[in-house]
Amino acid sequence: MPSGKLWLETNFTVTRMGFNRYPAIIDPNARVNLGVTLMCAINDQPLNLTGQNLWLAAYFAGYSLNENSIWSIQKERSYANQTGDIHAGYFVGEVPPQDLGKWVSMRVDLGHYLNITLQLIERIDIQTIRVYGLILFVECLGAYAEVEYDYVKTTGA
Image (cartoon, rainbow, N blue to C red; front, side, top):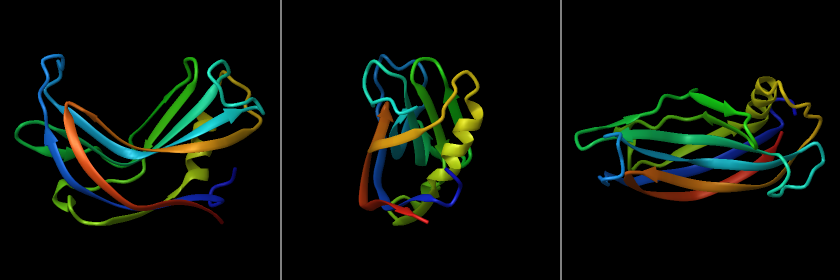
């Protein structure tokens, strides 16, 4: 898919975020991420538990926090893992802590991130990708976050 052909648009606000400490957490820093994951099947296979799927996450914002401060995970950080299902994630936005409570509009070129992911995958011959759905998420580890979404939509060129 060429860049500029599939876009995701959203408007959201992070209204509150806080730190929780659980004895099971070894790392003193907690994490909060929010974004969307595309659920994709590859090479005309169905999206299921037995086949190999592609899970592409676009993080609108990410935070590390501790009892004293909150700091943003920088835009353009990413990861890719090809063990079992293919997992790739990209921090496509960055909302500084001082902007918590403000509304943020974001437009993400999903075609661009699909292309980057395909260039990273070397062990699998991928001919086709079918997006079956998306998961809008707020994930927290040792923290809590309250996020309000006004809308999330995909558009073509």
